Image (tube, rainbow, N blue to C red; front, side, top):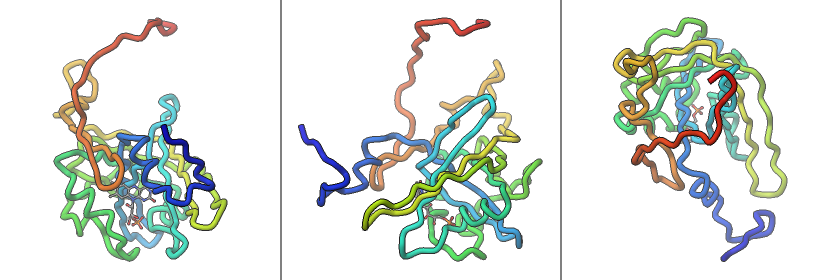
Length: 210
Ligand SMILES: Cc1cc2nc3c(=O)[nH]c(=O)nc-3n(C[C@H](O)[C@H](O)[C@H](O)COP(=O)(O)O)c2cc1C
């Protein structure tokens, strides 16, 4: 059994964390600058952190040799963004939109993705995605570098203020059909995984009201 202290382990490959905390859902985030430049990029440091109220977060790093990524700059300036569900069918497009393109370049065009309008926020959503969540910025929390080689990250919390679900992904019972949507998840390095076998396991307790 190996034990590593990340503060002192000189040969620690930082990607090891991504391989251990996996599979991770991918937040495919569309945003727009105040001037109207549209941006789209994937973030696997992403999750839902509350369902009522619905809140999601993603973490955007800023390597020392880069200025703030367009997504973070847009969200800071406008307070709005959209989560688009990344799926196995859209995997090439998801990857293509991670290109570090200049702010005025629209990654929807790079990945040949059709846009659809949102209801409560200005950024467009990915039309081909089975579900999209319109979000309003709640707060940004900075994770500061602690030692040489560390990267600053900003965790962006968004309150979901609108849901779009394509009809074909709604079940007869009115639920979202995750299996049909075939979400893409990220492992370590360049590894990705579609969902594996599904099984059901009832909770060992009843929630109030059930
Ligand atoms: C699947 C995938 C997941 C990624 N996850 C993150 C992440 O969690 N945080 C991050 O800062 N960058 C992440 N990236 C890299 C960004 O997508 C990339 O830096 C992108 O150019 C940022 O776009 P922007 O500058 O237009 O905002 C990821 C890339 C891929 C392909």
